[in-house]
Image (cartoon, rainbow, N blue to C red; front, side):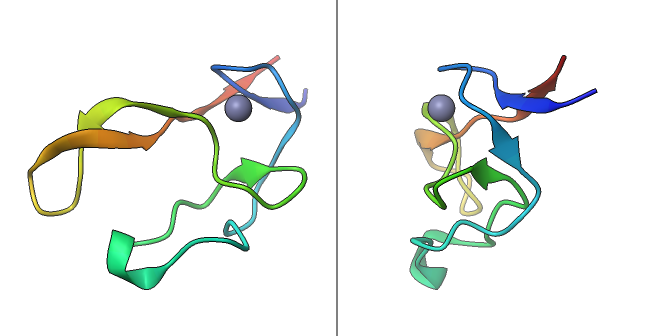
Length: 60
Ligand SMILES: [Zn+2]
């Protein structure tokens, strides 16, 4: 079983995105294989504001 980004289908790795800035809130535990956060989807951030947040990985 491997993990992919549920939006773009690129391989996902269980590691903090290298480009994550702490001001954006708690870092997600998954990132694209190149270190970027997973693709953004509409969601709610750690402050309860409607915004775009990285999607969850999909296991294939
Ligand atoms: Zn993606």
